[in-house]
Amino acid sequence: MPNTAYHAPGRCPVCGGAMELTRLNCAGCGTEMTGKFALCRFCALEEKHLRFIETFLRCRGSIKEAERTLGVSYPTVRGMLEAALAALGLGVPPPPDRSEVLERLESGEIDVETAINFIKEGQTNGK
Image 1 (cartoon, rainbow, N blue to C red):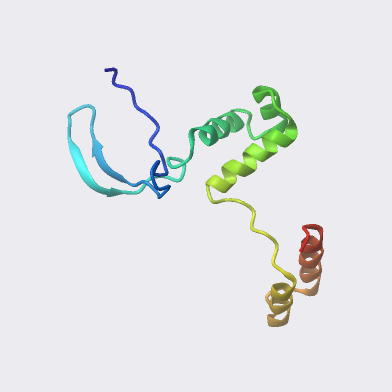
Image 2: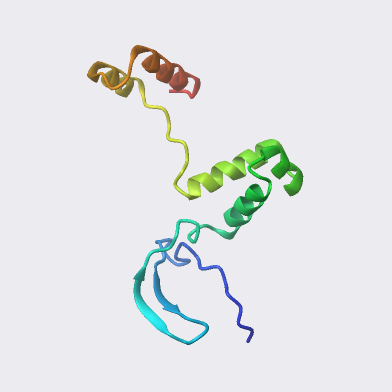
């Protein structure tokens, strides 16, 4: 059997819960450690997101270049980017609803212009 390293799944294939790393070993000397180890946020990504991020970085962040490299449309690249960001927990939060905007304005947390922009943005997003 070849000594192949596989991508560790971030989610349990049975229940969908988060997997955790509990054992490490050194390929050189055979030292082993057990315990609870934190994974980097990229380690928990699905392979498709990792491949996209690698391609996107090779394209120096250019969506147009990623479009050409992947042979897909601009909206598809945007969708892949949004999916990868969401998988990393970096998705764009929705704009606050009208009552939250008014509360923030009343408390002085935001100014009138910002409140107007939030409300307009919410209206264009169907809120």
